[in-house]
Length: 277
Image 1 (cartoon, rainbow, N blue to C red):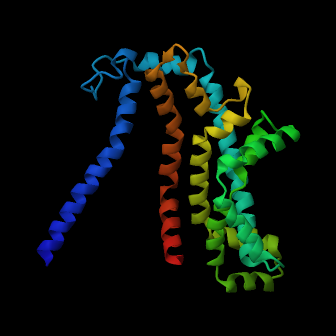
Image 2: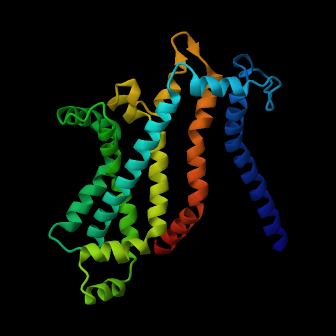
Image 3: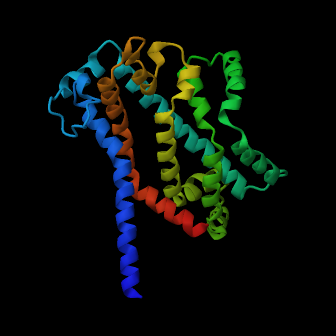
């Protein structure tokens, strides 16, 4: 029996190793292509280690070339950070309300929030476009930030953690004369920090990688985000894939950093969520 278990573990390890390699290879190819001259990008067989290095020229063309990639980068940082912070605030307040406040129609309202999961995001683009144009928020970072700041998923996810807070903690706060603002800020939020970190990192990644909303709601080149900026290396005369890969590598660096920094909190948040589930 032990021998069969060992064989099974070896087989599972080998299969998972192959799956891991399959996921990593495109990433390795992307980095390799960003170092190559354009003519070598699609050379076959693939030179995983470039024979002709063009890294300096590629990254220089991306950051100091025809398109203001540094401006796109700054726009993305600004929109992503503000969207993440506002989304954390809105989702955590809504989650606290749905978990620890009693008011008429609470469950019905929460069901309405959950029902928004069933609505395809593409189906509300036109109403959003018309509303934001009417509010003079079209072609502005403010409108883009507002769109990403209200999340039913964030509300649902954080609500589950807020519901796990023992009632005694809140009762002790009430005995000290704390109202809901103090209970929320002083007791509830510190107890769900892993959940906040997990959702914050997910929201950061989703917003940073968002392509559709900036494409639809932004028109000015000076407001474009990095995802729109990368697209500009593909012109009517052809796509410069070495520059696209260099821009993409530059774009994913903050995502890698933010995940490494918050990895412990994410794992803790997922583990706590599994225990609560």
